[in-house]
Length: 238
Length: 238
DNA sequence: CTCGAAAGTTAACACCGTTAGCAATAGCTC
DNA sequence: GAGCTATTGCTAACGGTGTTAACTTTCGAG
Image (tube, rainbow over the protein chains, first blue to last red):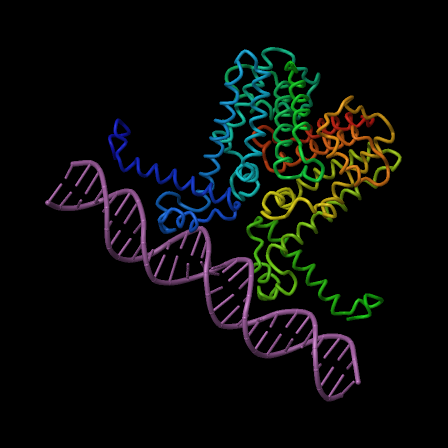
């Protein structure tokens, strides 16, 4: 059992990690080149020069392999967002949020198939109980944006709705628990969710091609929407 | 060749139409019960008590069958929207648009798999050239909402952006041609597209389960968003 | 050096879309 | 009504898919 995870991670472990990484890389390659239906155990194995049943030493089923791929993609997306965020000064959460939002759209448009997989997975998956979504890999992704909104709120400027329907209170409290330490008012969390929905939805509509009927270049529409969102969050529009 | 389509549509035609209808009904049943991957020629045939190759007398391929299903679903959605619209007086396009928007969300939430199929198809389909989307069945669907927006504009109240980036002009002119007769200003069409994107995106984010992490009851969020949209379109908020 | 676990293999099963070739049937023409 | 023909359906078969079972090889720890 190796030295319980110490200096040499046991050469065998290393080559196994390599194989796992190659599997996901190949699966993604198939996704990008030929669409989600092409992510086939046999195709992956073929491209890797091995036999299909051999893949079962690495993933217990085709479903789990796809799940591993989506987790990997969520990680990559989260990292891309964090990198974009860190290119703006921490003292200006408004500019940071703008940069992160643009990066979300940029990533989605340059990786449409990957984004499509992430966006459709919850609906496609018949079983995944939506209850245990707490330590979900998508949380790191959404958390980056949520955190920036919290910082933006600290600066003041968010104009929350004066009253909040009773329906909201219990649900928003759950979100609040996910936010580190700070006691964010429920009204502000409401604004977060509304802005998050708008941002995510706008990107999805564009990536899935539902703007093609109207626009050949949706850039300005997104920029306008983004300004709208940032205004709602009380960020300076520069 | 029958009487070139006159009084009796040739009994044979009738039974063929019935078969076509049953195929789509069965395909949809499989979609709803077991997800999009379950829409299988063999499963459809099995459920209909016939053999799989027999289906090729009705649809040239699996792909075309799915395409026929999506067209059918677009028709149904458009009809549902039109019905909701007609339950409000034509003299009040604002209330009509509100009713239609609510119906869009209601239909999507009560038919998530169907909505998922419609929303996903443009990205999933590898080939479909986006150029010939003109007499697309999705136009009737989107057109209902677009028409209401035009009527709303006639009432006055839309505050278009004062200036429009040059980038917009050429693209928006194409949309304008699809609108019956009336010379709608490009700035107003811009507002249409923005509102349409927001409405469609909000519904998609909810249907695909991306609000589950935060909300158990997204109703009030949607109502708030809808009010926002209607305000942007200059409709009385009642 | 031994030995057991890990990694990979082939063979096989049931399912899928699709094609080829054949049988039945229903309807139109005379 | 008889006969022809297009339509509708069938079975058999091909290659592709996920998955399991049973076997071989390889490699690392004792």
